[in-house]
Image (cartoon, rainbow, N blue to C red; front, side, top):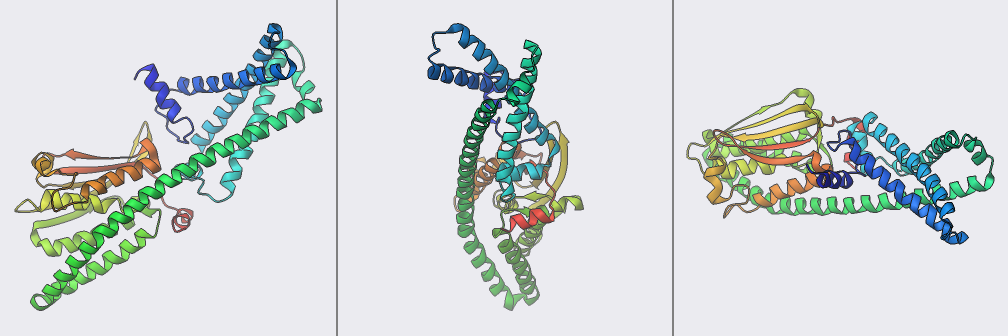
Length: 397
C-alpha cells in the first residue's frame, strides 16, 4: 500500500472506535501531529491578531513553539486515552459507544473524557516546557487565575465542537442505518406475501392427499412465522435465533421439494449466543435454493455452518451457507446473486445485506460468494460479540 493510500485509510478510520487497526501506528501519529499543528497555528495567529503582533516574528515564533508543544501533548494524550479504551473495552461496548446506544451516559462520557484529556495533556505540556526552560511552568500556570480561566474556556469550546461533530456523525450513521433497514422491510414485505400464499396453497392441496404432511407443513410454517415476526421487531438478534428460523424455512422447503432438498447445521453450541443483525441468513438460503438446487434435477444439500476465527484483525464470526448445486459458473447466464427472471429480489437482498454490514461494522464485516468444487459458498464475516442480558434489552428497544 502506498503512502497516500495508507494515509487515506488511516484518516477515513481515524474517528472510528476499533480494537484491531490494520493501519500502521505512524500514520495515526502523523494525523495527530497534523491536528496539533493546526491548533498551534490557530492559537498563534488568533492572539497575534488581537494583540497586533503579526509583524513581531520573535513573538510569533516563541508563541508558535509553545502552542505546538501544548497541542502536541494534548493530541498525543487523546491518542493514548482512546487507544487504551479500544484495547481495554469489549467489542460490544465499543460498538455501543460508537453508536451512542448505551443510554444517556454515553453522551456524557465523551465530553468528560475530552475535558480530562485536555487537562492531562496540558499538564504534560507544562511539565515538558518547564523541563526545557528550567522553570516551574506547571505551578506558574496553575497559580494564575487568568490562565486557568482561558484554558477552561478553550477546553469547553473544543469539547462542544467535539460533541457537535460526533452528534452529527452519529445522526448521519443512524439515518443511513434506518434507510437500509427500511429497504430490508420493503424487501421483506415483497417476499413474505408470495411465500405466504404459496405455502398456504401447498397446505390446502395436501389436506386431501396427505393430511399428515399437511399438518407437518403447517407446524413448520407456524414455527417460521413465529421466528420471523420476532426477528423483524429487533435491531439485534442471536445466531441461534437466525438458525432456528432458517431451520423452519428449510423444513418447509424440504416438505415441498422432498428428497431433492437436504440440509444440516454445523456450529458449536456457544456460538448460538453470537450477536448479529436480523434476517441475514434467509436471503442467502433463498439464493442457494433458487440458483443452485432448484435448477438441478436431482437437487442437493445445503449446509449452514459457523465458526469463531482469531486472526490479526481480531475475533470474528464466520457463517457459511454452502450448497452443492449448479455453482457460480453454471449460473452466470442466469445471474446468480443478481436475480434471475422470475426470481427478482435476490440481488437486491444480497446488496441489502452488504449495505447493512457496511453501515454497522464498516470494513470489519463482509459478504462474499465463492465457488466450491461442487456448488457455491456464501460467506458472512462479522465481529464476534456474544449475547448478554444487556444486549438483549437494548435490541428490543
